[in-house]
Length: 251
Image (cartoon, rainbow, N blue to C red):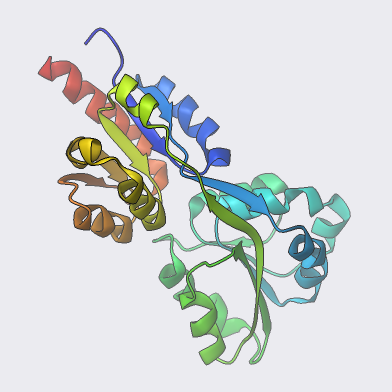
């Protein structure tokens, strides 16, 4: 194989650079294909430091949530927080660690609301304890609804909005991608809804890397037939290496 195979990186624009570096390391040509732009909510962000200080625990939904809040996370604030900072997945935990948080809790297995709800931590918090969930607007309500039913006082800090972007189909046609990395069911729906009819079959024929069964199911419903389900986003590197070797042997 003379030229490296192309991988569509279907992620919010702020998440693409690190994945593009990973692509190059594993012998792939990265093709940035953002379908979502992250717009911070300034008014909500302004109140976040007070919410963090007053809450008994904080839940961070994604690395994007941590990065959006980062300008407000001064050293003095971080040092004043002894409450557990709960991460939905290893990527979010890494972002919290890099931001300077000390007491970070994350599920050993899983990277979704259900995995967070299974943490033993909830049994150790006082009844009626306050919990702040830092997320994007219009996120899933499984976590706040369940915690409310368990008796916790829950507030959602919707610190950013996800705004749809128009896909660059000219870039898609020019690069002829062999595979795609996509990280939310929402982006799957945006992708296929925006696709020209002439490209739908080609989209469905791609190999998709996905790190959650919900994403894989949405891809399947959209007609994608080749889906590689990873246990976590951290497995992407090994999956890309393996697929690169397979493509090389096939040629």
